[in-house]
Amino acid sequence: MSTALAAPDTAARILDIAEHLVQTRGFNAFSYADIAAAMNITKASLHYHFPTKAKLGECLVERYQASFLAALARIDATRDDAASKLRAYVGIYTDVLKNDRMCLCGMLAADYATLPETIKDRVRQFFEANEAWLTLVLQRGRAWKILTFSGPPVENARFLVSALEGAMLLARAHEEPARFRSATARLLGDFGAGKPRTVTRRTRV
Amino acid sequence: MSTALAAPDTAARILDIAEHLVQTRGFNAFSYADIAAAMNITKASLHYHFPTKAKLGECLVERYQASFLAALARIDATRDDAASKLRAYVGIYTDVLKNDRMCLCGMLAADYATLPETIKDRVRQFFEANEAWLTLVLQRGRAWKILTFSGPPVENARFLVSALEGAMLLARAHEEPARFRSATARLLGDFGAGKPRTVTRRTRV
DNA sequence: GTCTATAGGTGGATAGAC
DNA sequence: GTCTATCCACCTATAGAC
Image (spheres, each protein chain N blue to C red):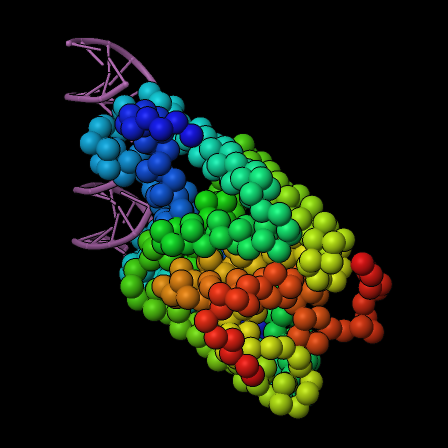
């Protein structure tokens, strides 16, 4: 939120680069050497800021979740109805994919079995926070007759998260971001949160 | 299809173990040493059967796709209506997850950026074959008024695949296979392919 | 086909100078 | 905070004996 143009501190820059590497390659497919090369410093220097790769991973998820929760708070502050909130939520994922990245925690979910316990815990916590927020949005959206869906809100929230993560995963594998747009349009439509005004044309049958 | 009880040949056993490792840990988180230890042979012996890890990966996807296509052919041969076919298709994924495995190609989709080109090609081919089969099922299912959905069949097929992969991914991270069941029930219901008779109880609102 | 032995590289991590 | 230098474990892969 600061308007200062000061260069980010070293720890933050390390996290930026590591985050990008994990989101594109996975936790087991990047090394301290990769980060060091990108920053023009040595591997040893990295260990001063993050003693182990496990610690680095923990900080990575922690920061990612904080930034995600901040985005959710902004949505709550700026969007009135549940449909608009849902569209904004999907928009977060869309922005992530725009940079050819997978969701950090979606990627870590694939690496899950190989992660240190501390990181596993934080990944689960990330998804639970997402589901909790979505559950509230769905509950209220249905109560106010803005959103339409059947079944318990929490199950629909979980379905939304997994469908979005899966759509990101496949869109990346096909190198076709358009597949993600198609999936989200369908998802939002199912919940009665589509945006008919800005849709270019609606395919019929 | 043979009824012989002969021990599988070495190459096949290697593939079995490698497949399990990739499905649980990912392509970059297993080594020849892991396979060698599980088989009580040396790493060098593995290289006789699969000269490089890239070749091993190719054979892995090739075999997986062949077995998947065979399963689809069995569905076509034994199931009449599109709804039943769709449920059987979801059943394949359910069986994979039962062994605490992720779909092989779903896992490789996460590792995608780090894969050799030859494996990338095969992964995409796997998903395209799935989408093609599903597209046909959806087309005919709607034509015969057995399945209900809106939009082009191919987009719905893609949505199904990505939603299933995402549901597997998240169910594994939460260590709760029940989440996958919930997601598939919802998916099948959306397409009018639910199985109301065997559902224990249907949650209402 | 499987072994021993080894090459050549990279992984995360540490010690200690500056 | 960053460096050089180094450690040891592990990686994929090969050569050549059996």
